[in-house]
Amino acid sequence: MTWVDLPFLSATRRSIYPETSQAVHSEHLATVRVLIAENTRQQKQLIVEVDSDHMHPRLREGDWLRCLSIPYEGWSYLPAGVYVVQTQGHFLIRRVKNNDLEQHQVLTMHADNPHTEGEMEVPQAHLNQVWQVLEIVSGSIR
Image (tube, rainbow, N blue to C red):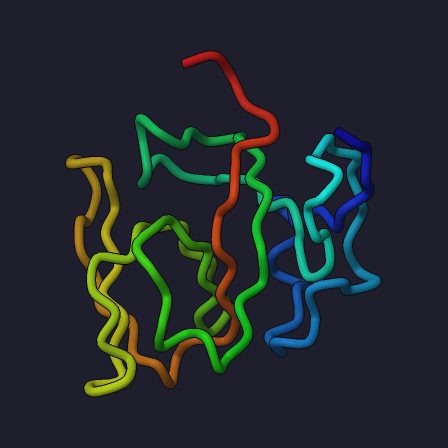
């Protein structure tokens, strides 16, 4: 294991985060030190703070997630999992339920918390950036 510094996207800093897919290592972001496996590629990773209960009980408000940037070319092939998606100024942390980007240009995302909006379809034209959630690096005991 080794300590690395990764960009940190807090809930309060999202409003100034650029919408271009090249902005993963933006100079506007602070960094945080996290412990990761030595053989882990840290390029194009960042830490994102959870700011809602849409993925409760697995993810809670205030949790920090280590995420890997997915290039545009890979969006049509996203495997099942939890992702952070930036869409026209909004950040969503949801589970990919159905990836139909290749045929119908729509990504169906699901909130695990039954008391929230459940499923939502995100048109490909509204997607700005996509990160795959790799792990929770900081959070409360569940």
